[in-house]
Image (cartoon, rainbow, N blue to C red):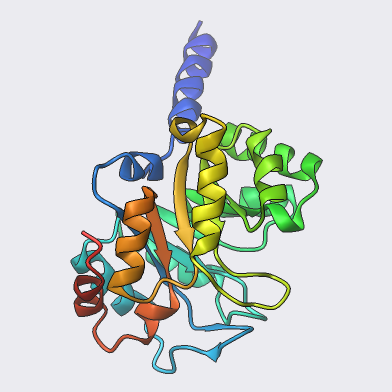
Length: 247
C-alpha cells in the first residue's frame, strides 16, 4: 500500500532529524584541545562586554581562528542575548552550535531544536534530579547533545548518576562569583578516582584568560574549553586565540 510506503519514508526522515547535524562529541574526540568560542554581549557580573556587538563578525573571526564549536547566549534580560542571534549564527556556520541558556522546562528544549541548536546547556545547580534526567532524556530523544554543567562535587555526583556524556566544569563560584581553575582540577580528579574518566568528555568553563591557563588545562587532560569574555573583549579574536595557544 502507498500509505505504508509513505509512513516508512516518514520514519526514515524522522530518524535523520533526530541525529545531530553538527555533533559536538566528534569535535571533542579529536586529539587537540577543542575551543568552544562564545558570543555574548554582556553578563550580570561584568555588565556590557562588547559595545560594538556584531555577532556574525565575531563568528567569522572564531571560524578563522579554528574554533570547534560556537556558544551563543540567548538570555535577553541578563545577558542581552536573543534567540534571533542564535538563528543567525546557525545559518552562517556548519560548526556545532551550543544554545547557552538557563533551561528549566521541556519547552525550551523543543525551542532549541527549532532554532537550530545542536547542543543545549543543562545547569545542575538550577535543576532537581528529576528535571535533569527528564531534560537529558528529551534532548537525547530529539537528537540534541547536552553539556551538563557542574560547579561542585555534590553536583558532579548527581550528574554522574545520569546518562550525561559531556560535563562542563564551571570554575565560577555561584555564591561569591570568584573564579579558580582549581575547580576543574578537583572535580576532574574525582572522576578519575572513580575510574570513569573515559566515560565523559570534559569542558572547562570560566576564568580562562591566558596561555598559562590553557597549558594548565591541557595538562589536566580536559577535552575542551569554553571561552567567552576573553575573546569578546579582544580587539582581534583570531590573534587572541593564537596567543592562548589552544591548537
